[in-house]
Amino acid sequence: MTLAFGGWEKLWADRPIEPYWKMLGQVQGAVEELPHQRLCGVSTGEWGEVADLFSTVDLFDATQIELPPTLSDWQETSEEKSGFKLQLKLDGTDGQFKEALITKPDGNDNDYFEDLLDLDPEERGREEAGGLYLFDCGYWSIDTYHQIWEAEDFFVTKLHGNIKPETACERPVPDKAADPEANVAGYRVLSDQYVRLGDDRTDRDGGDPDRWYRVLTVEVSTEEKIQILTNLLWLEAEQICRLYKHRWSIEIVFRWLKDRMQLDRFISQDPTGVVRQTLTALIVWGLLAIFNEGSQQFSPKRLWRKLQAAMHQALFDLGRRYQQNLDPPA
Image (cartoon, rainbow, N blue to C red):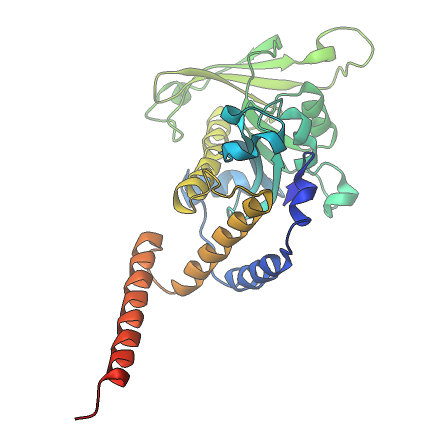
């Protein structure tokens, strides 16, 4: 986890927090030995048809986390806007966390996107290119798209309204893709176009005549029309729709963080407490996962009720023994 805005270095100045990190490391090591489950979104068979084409698949998105109004002065913001963003990078094949970046609550996410990407072959530790990045339109830097293209990696995202691509030619739309019942992703493909972005649209210096992109205009199940931008020029339109749908799997993780782990709002009035609450939630969740090993279904609520019942029973037994020790002998 990286803390990416000024002031967070003060977190470590108040009280030692190393024991939390140490305990999290021990719990995390034990959890890694447990079998992982694939994130929901598309079936294993459908996803396998696409995932096998790429060396890595990464998902990106950001979500807003609230902070107590008492921290607004420290954060140099208003009480209404006290909070931060969690920029998250997930492994798209098994849902494991790869990187988390905590940033300012306002501003453009593009400033942090390159920090989450893995475009340098030497630094990323893999000899071959061919990674796939799935992300929302909040990351919409054309320069970053060009960098992904030049790194021989690929991406699928929603076209941001500020980007005006230049259409070069139309691709044929298969008949089965026009039928929503035949499209596994549930999307109806209306058009499929080759486009150019940025300087590539003109003859100005800096453009690359070989750099092409693709825009799919689709109708989703809610009858809303969206445009999907990608540099995957050879895949079928239906496969690209599957990939875009799979990107929503990261929302499951955000729902897990906010609803199950109660990290939608931090209760501490001290900056150090923000990190303590996060680490404590991760440690407790890891212990629950270990405790639940071998069960058919992981239900944190049921586990929590069992733990509460066990604690009540332990306190009752302790009180009974204490009372027995106080009773005079017969």
